[in-house]
Length: 387
Ligand SMILES: *Cc1c(COP(=O)(O)O)cnc(C)c1O
Image (cartoon, rainbow, N blue to C red):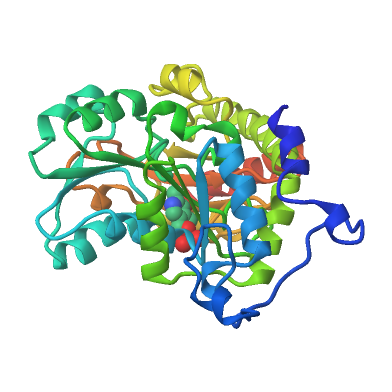
């Protein structure tokens, strides 16, 4: 069956719940055992033991996401950052070396470069476009390679299959941040990834009202990820699992619309003289376009563009009076967002060579005509303020 069908059917079984369409929300800390035998029996992955290890509500969500992404198992945690920390710390120990893409989400860099470094894990950031060249950075103690494709600030597409092949040849695991594409537009396990993490806060939630992280993995990694999940204790609450599951039902429909509108807005921006360059892999002249076409089945609504060099008053004139684009971190909700970003200081392995003001835009579910009109008025204010 197609993904757009599966998002409506996975993780629910109405006739186990009086015919009610959606699964109930379990709120649980204590879970009772009926007998001493039951209390002392060995635990199995599908049982329920204590609230932190999940309830049927958690399981409905994680089973659905694992199935969509093509994983053997899934785990829900209380934020995307928690998913990243759980996996990075759970799969490494003192003396290990890890490779992290230089375009990774800043809090990922922080987990690797600050937290793991304190625990004796060596971290090297690498050029995200390195591909099979990653072999040259592998050391005997390299245990993990982290990829984020496309990078959620600068949108380089990584050659994940080539990186995975090189990593595996050197005995390292590959972890991918799949937030941008969501489980619908990228299937990380078919690219050779061992563990996928994502901020369900973004597209899965879809309504800017949820913090949630998801981890999915291969059968081989399941025991280690399950152990890390238990050790780090980042379990989300039942209501949040319910919201994520509810977001999932419309994910295919929303993403299709995000993609269509984002492509229109990106093409419009590319034709503007105030815009030096657009960074969106779905555009045919984007450097990552060929890899994106090979490895992804769609593009979401988040991309970057570079304004010609602009003074702060011009930028403020543009941003302060937008009607539809909000200024705020995060993305993946139904509403549009626009913020200035500053990639250069976030890099250590590669230079950010572009002159001008980098912007990150999230194209929401509004009419693209209205969004373009809002941007057009904003660019007119920028020019009127003297560029
Ligand atoms: C937002 C984000 C995260 C972290 O998710 P939170 O739920 O905000 O902790 C991780 N990776 C990427 C690419 C993100 O955009």
